[in-house]
Image (cartoon, rainbow, N blue to C red; front, top):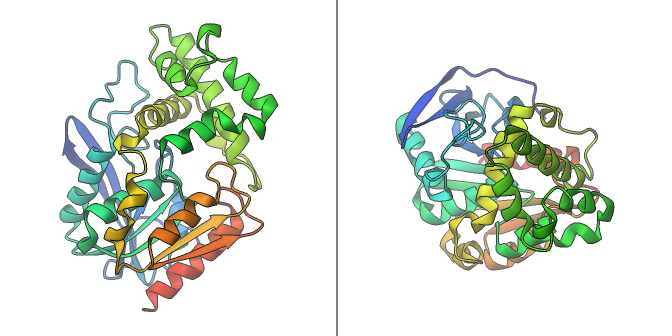
Length: 313
């Protein structure tokens, strides 16, 4: 990956509904524009996301999606109302940011949840997208949510049993994502804190496969609360899409060059998700990395090669 760099411009953009979104620009102000869509939902855009791009070639636009990172208000705050934090709000925010920065068209780059958001943005605004680069691909279908929260018990039985035990006994045979969402908004702060810890502990179990070290942000109780609330909020609603909508809508991406980079050992987002998307989107180049999981070094190296190729035209 490229060396660490600092932004040359940043700010807070009022996107309505009482929300302000933090954005930053890095690299070459006159370079090829690219917008970066982080994962989660709710993980925020960390400095590492800047390093996928040649700073001499790209104008790198990053932002923290509603309710997380340096955007305000945070979803983890007591009494936070998430009614105006949906995928459709985020898609509108991306367009507001593009207009605010005076960008006509840009590359869209997203990972994990950001791949869902990137697909949705490109399908809604294909005329604004020059290329689409996605990794650790997911489409946030009901089947995918059930895999992560229920079916993956077959892969991590001990960790999942602990995850399931985090909800009241009467709710353990129902949808765990619904039970955790309720606990994360409970009146008792101790109940909320315990639910956030248990949710993020499960997240670590499956995401860390193939990673050299755990994500230290899970040590921060404020991060855990914001992250867990947003993930459960989005997942229990199926990201406000009709089930399978993004796969069916892949035809709208015709003519947009795209690359899908995915780890074959990714248990969080199994490789068949990216494979099915590539079959539905003829312009997509699927690159399966044999020794990689949900992101990680081998995936990052491939992504840098991809962005270098697009920068060269």
